[in-house]
Amino acid sequence: MDVNKIKSQKSILELLEFGIINIDKSSGPTSFNVSDFVKKKLNLRKTSHFGTLDPKVTGVLPVALNRACKLTGFFLGENKDA
Image (cartoon, rainbow, N blue to C red; front, side, top):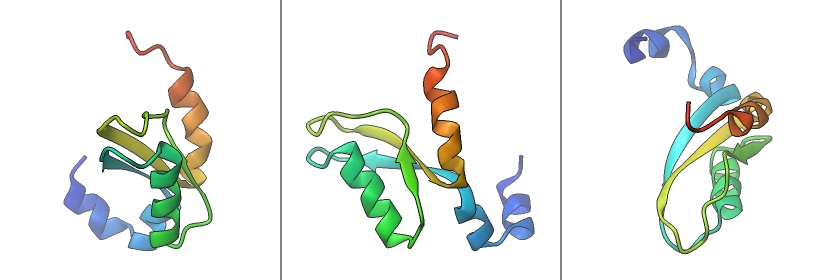
């Protein structure tokens, strides 16, 4: 889907209500710390990270926003080999 089309149809508040963002986690913070930071900075009701990265590990950490938190169980339950 075209990103510009999505931007023109949805407001930022709508995107924050049911969205998933990818964070490039640096070494140091826990996955919970990163998720909590996103929650506070974006003034959200709820965030949830998809899986856990060890504090010493760097990598991509998907973070679900508000209503999208309900999806984390679905994605974490899926077979990663498929």
